[in-house]
Amino acid sequence: MQIKAFLEDNFDVTIDSMETHLLEVPRFDSLSLIELMALLEQHGATISLDDVMAAENLQVLETKINASL
Image 1 (cartoon, rainbow, N blue to C red):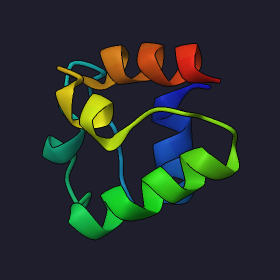
Image 2: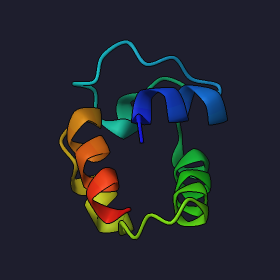
Image 3: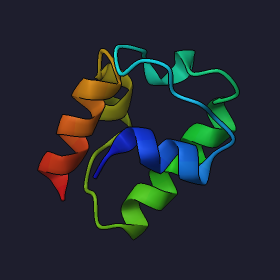
């Protein structure tokens, strides 16, 4: 899964850098995080909220998500 495209397609966000932490993405808030977790579950990802929050940046998050698929 490409997290940049996934976020841009499912949320009203633009990703400028994969070095950004998820919660630093403009217009991505805590409600978006809840929606993201539900979407990831629908796609079969078994990543936990703790793992999502612990990811240093979007590149690390993408790696963790892909490992959980």
